[in-house]
Image (tube, rainbow, N blue to C red; front, side, top):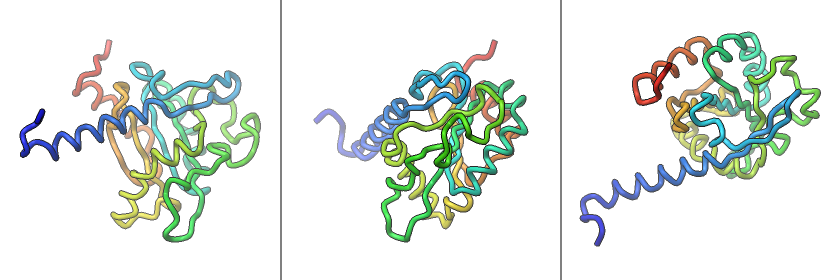
Length: 193
């Protein structure tokens, strides 16, 4: 066999993590006005830090409001925010179906979304099924830890390397998050010039 028996569980775990990273890289995003360009998460590697905040309507609106208020810090920290609107579901419903098909805009046209005129800070998720499937593990982990992700939200901070740097619940304090992501990238392999 290619791996000794005592290392097989570790290898399986590593393979799952690699596969999950590959799935994350293929998730699709839409630019918002004025660009409207469509990109995959992998296209942001090395250039931007991505902060995914998934939650119900209140979390979604709070994410937009607070990130808009800290747009300068987010831009200076090379960060983009992907608010993901989760559906309120009955207990026992599969988490993979939690992402609202309207994605980030809450069911309104992207041109009328409540981001204001802040170009380059927000990206919208494209492909609710793929996003739902990918977020399912994160949602289930948070649920098992006693968090209601619809009301409190879950935040995933993706480093410039494309790997998850930080997981948390609730809408983040943007200045603190930008600072911590910069430190993580600096300390663990992403050079700064």
